[in-house]
Length: 195
Length: 431
Image (cartoon, rainbow over all chains, first blue to last red; front, side, top):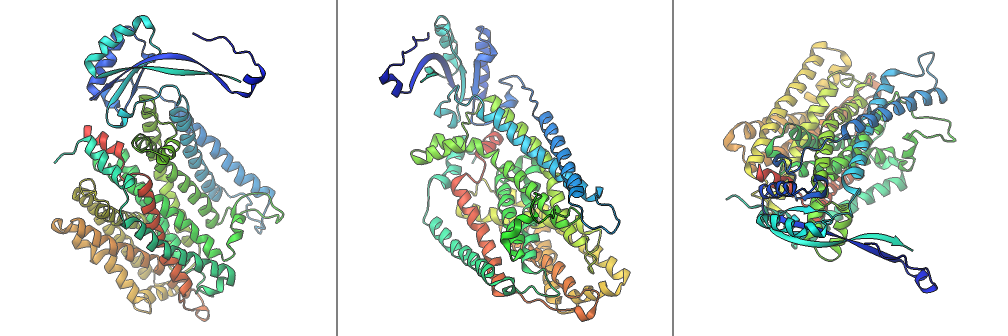
């Protein structure tokens, strides 16, 4: 429920007012990935949408199939980045050789052998930089403030969480998850910044 | 005894969280040598390149030897980490980060040497392609310009390859540490939470990087070899140089990795993780590379001897019978004669055996780089232009400082980040 907008009086103007809506999450800390998988299945059976289930762990658990295999377009983006840098590298080498021609005694100014090496290196550089940037944007920086973890995850537990549980469904979900580990309810502030 | 994940985590984070008396002592001791090397370099910058031993006709000496040597050492990480990741070899898990760290720091150190060798190091940026009042542009026909692009690409790639898998361990340290350390690791982990989406993206990125970094590594040392092979200098102008250098780089890289692992195992008490099986496997790889290196040396020298070209035979005999014969036969012993029995006989292929073999290999490979460069330059085509080369205290000090600098960087790194990847080991434990 969103609170009323605070009027901007002279005192409030000095303050940076952060009005919070609160969202209720429920998390269960499972000691084993198998229990985490069972808890996810239990939530799905209870009608929770997959997009509202978050699983966190201190190691990759893809082989357990806890969440469905997610396709990523990272390889395609990397190929695009490599192509862009490769074309850029070739243009850099060939155009600048013509703009700043050295005396070659009649031989070619633009040589494909040597320009090929520059093009190759910049192609690979493009692939590397694209991989890093795409990973940073899609894997780490995006959404990092949305669903905080629990310290026990670093200790080896697998966290299975349900985001924004409506009050009506809370009791049922808690009952279903109790069998798989320690259940916690969290109120997560959803920031609504107003100056 | 099989360790649990919690015990493993405690053991691997202990070197980061706890500090023994040896750490400041090691940092201080190594730091003194690094400062001495830096001072020698500044003395050279102030006085001039003439304080180094390089002079007509040998214009490439210790600095270029070190450049090639350290770029070679950097191939450790690529081979061990990338190739073994692609082949999904489980024994790689404790050693990938050790190897990746060697790559990054060896590259950084190797890349400094062209700057030192320049003499007027402050003009290094002339090699970059940018419009300037000089009206000149880098000559893309030059292998030195290829070096600029190749080494920078490899350095950026290696740093990316190192940093990506460190992020989850930084998150682990964020949750484990308190105080200012927690704040630092909170920044370093970039908000990592360990969601399945993040793990999926990380693994995808690591797979891509593993595939991409291998051809880059091969191209880097190929291009470094072309600094020599593209010039018509006796015993340089050879098509075998590219694979010869790459094989030699991998050879020295594996040896450096074994040395680093042996020290880490001893000083950080990681015996259960950097176990004899790792050394045994790396020892086998080192044996294969030793045989391959010997094959390349034999093929190169046989071809030269058979061709009987006067200028090339002069250099051949100079190294095998002349003033460089001591170094040549020492190189052969260090790279093949000593390591071969230590690595080929299973009973001798222990932690100590592979460590000793690796020490001799590193020494031998440094000598090999020296013998590729200096004898050829000292005996080119015209006998009146033949000369000698004697390194000065400046070059020797800087060389020693780089070895200490490498050790120092390694020690500092292992203090900030777990030198054995915790999450990879945990994943391996489950498998």
